[in-house]
Image (cartoon, rainbow, N blue to C red):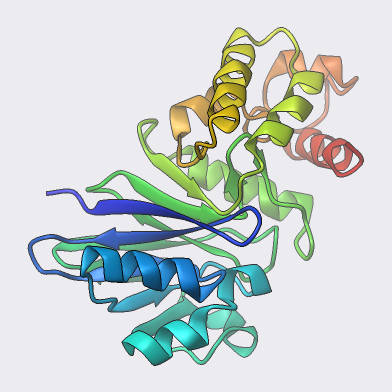
Length: 255
């Protein structure tokens, strides 16, 4: 049986996620932007939180940890390489490590770029990838610490997941990301259709995440830096994929 996924809006535009194994009762939280909505969701569902899985050290992903741990005694798991910038870890993680929620196993993937210590969690049986501010709906995170080469390599790892994987990213940035995408890839019919759907969803107050990887591959310009049409449109016909990605990221930073 697949894990139950709950998407929790936090702060102005963040998302946290709960995953729950019905058979065992095990529950994990991915990122903790603020405690109140997360604790309210746990209480409403009658779930006991066992683990907090942290993707990276930015305040809007960890500020709720202390209060949530005080209320639940949950274990804290995060990147060993970033332990000095995270709340005190119960367990430090490196790429290839496995976390367990009930009978399901999640795989730790190193995805530096947004930060140098960013990790993602992939649960293959449920088809869930928690990518936070690495691969985002319609975009990717700004490169605060890592290099374009690092981020491109990270995105290529995530692009190899099964197309039906749900990408559980960290922010409601989709509408803005897709407006930018249309400046890079204006003739993409799948992108135009997605913009229409996202506009309707936001007008109705609905989240636009999670998103399916197949849709990201078809519309997210940061996953499409290898595309000859995009390279030519940017005047980079002979550039490497990583160089094209760097140009797209630089344009987005000014958008």
